[in-house]
Length: 195
Image 1 (cartoon, rainbow, N blue to C red):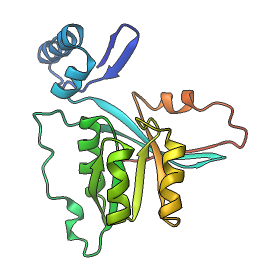
Image 2: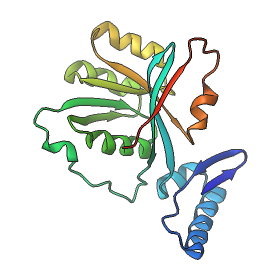
Image 3: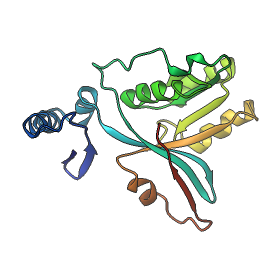
């Protein structure tokens, strides 16, 4: 269901095809958004997000998928399916939104051969750990709080020149990926993936 309030919208799964139960769930979400705001709704209810990892800027190349977040009351359930793999690549992420961060840790750790071993809410929190524990892959939200993401990645690259680091974005739906890209002259390569 698409929920909109004051020009901002997000999608929420209702978890049922029963119209009465779906309407009841939608009403709970709406009342939470209207009385307590989006942040409280994100903490209480799962929402649908589109995650796009950008591999190149010219041409713009990204892989994207749709996920449901885990609200505060929901434990995503560990261990991961990737635990069957002997040698795992360590992934670090930097994501300010707690529910999105928890969701990304869960799904990245379920990818064969990978484990998200550290997740940080901002670049400052991540800097020392990155140098101390050196991940095999660093994923950073393009909307990094604090310093601009380009500045942060340049800072990291001066210390660890060969660290693969990519940015990603969180969107309400896949159309927003295209809408936010402007002035691209070299073209687009977008690939949708299922988890």
